[in-house]
Image: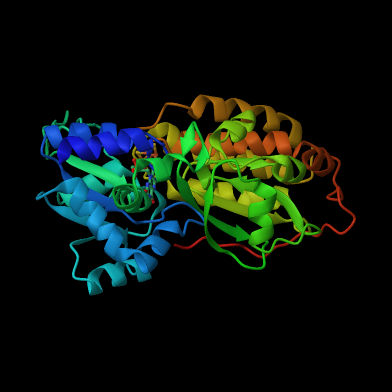
Length: 373
Ligand SMILES: Cc1cc2nc3c(=O)[nH]c(=O)nc-3n(C[C@H](O)[C@H](O)[C@H](O)COP(=O)(O)O)c2cc1C
Ligand code: SF4
């Protein structure tokens, strides 16, 4: 059975739906060898993420079946943000729930493993090879633990139910299988769609009820994603291969449409402020670098002579954040800021001239947008 499952998943080409898109069969193969327990990550930690809540609400039986197929007799825990509807549903179903604080980095896999072992829900800075288990450099014993995204686990059950060919037939050959995407922002019907790679982003936005007259730039992949210009977004396909042209990828399956009538420079400022507040405060480059990145962005946006040097600083700072934290959080935010610099070039030039008028109907908004999970 073990071998059969791994073969099925290899043939299906299932990759993780939590962001990094690593081969699921490979992860399970190592986990089985080391008798790892399983954490099903249903936190939806990314801004605008909602797909794992959908899996729990609509496909709980298949999710639980998928988890027992993956874990066999080993322990399975379901991670969800504390106080969320997802957590309540998992508890009602009598499942073993791991309650993560509603912070962005709490849903990163080593945060969940730390939490599961009685520690804080923060990324492990001194890592142990967590799927295999071992002792980290602080002498803590880490039990072998596999973390899989909830959609990934649901897809495992689907591959078993419908066969790997059914799965492989859908989407692009290099990125096979159906996948969920949560669409939000300036759309009439925000929600979760089950789509395949290669579908145009324009079609996805249309299904979510986006009014083309109001579509502005589009964030694909949340805080760890990229900003696409409106026209770029409307001509791009929903696939990591197509998004690579812009330095992006499908990632955790979130698309957020900015309203063309709202200043995108300010909107990005809010996203970067939020990111700065979510650093786990453990790694210098992340703890100090993200607030500086946000401060540079505000200097750039603030209609004044500070703009030019701030722009140069921001570009350099974003570069210097890459690969410096214990987790990928700062890398993701740096990528988003870099893409925003490119896409909002005209807007930023207007701001530097003391105006915000790239669109005649553009208005400034002072309303603070708070991102909650
Ligand atoms: C800051 C941060 C937050 C994350 N939040 C989530 C999350 O909410 N849900 C999730 O499944 N993966 C999240 N991930 C990715 C996980 O660390 C992990 O890669 C994933 O759960 C593995 O599952 P997969 O192989 O099925 O994709 C996050 C990663 C980072 C760096
Ligand atoms: S990079 Fe940031 S979020 Fe990640 S572990 Fe370090 S301080 Fe925490």
